[in-house]
Length: 84
Image (tube, rainbow, N blue to C red; front, side, top):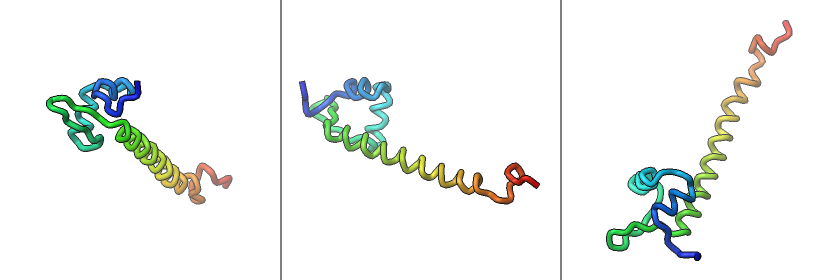
């Protein structure tokens, strides 16, 4: 079944994290949710948005780390790399 909304438990199972972690993510505003009475639901589109953004954040972090490491690796004054 392709329901438009998922429960917190569904999201936790999908991401292989705990239910309290999903609740904290919602509380921090990282993931948007819909309240239907006392039930909390998350739209499938919101999951796709979050996952897409996380991939971008991960890629940006990797680029930043590689950039900062490149300065250390390309240090001509580093005695380890000098044959003198």
